[in-house]
Length: 150
Image: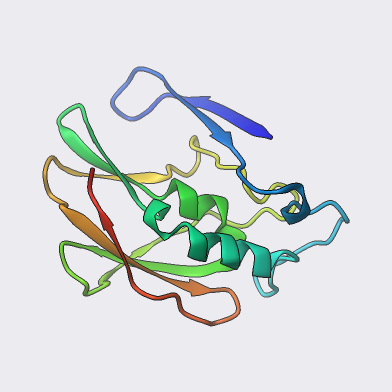
């Protein structure tokens, strides 16, 4: 399954994002179950397991046009299983919170880069690495993950 979005980024030009959902068919909701902000997504356990197996993808660093971009795209695709994302750069303080887009139970992996950018901008060379910890929608907390900048 592929999801393709195009938009104009704040610095002009065009950005095109094509996201391949690398989940097995049994992870995708097909029975019409609905999730709300107060309830867990029907496939919460599978999403949590997928996140725990892909820790090194929680952040992605990219130098672009004189800035350092830090992408939270992977976490956004599993946001229906995440209550909060705490992070920091070059320290394990976890003194920042990433605001996830709202969970859409009918299309849980969709990312809308027009209304919610999946990255933040830093001055070039700011982050050598990032620390990330998730609080899952069931209240449990992930281990602290350290992701190196590329």
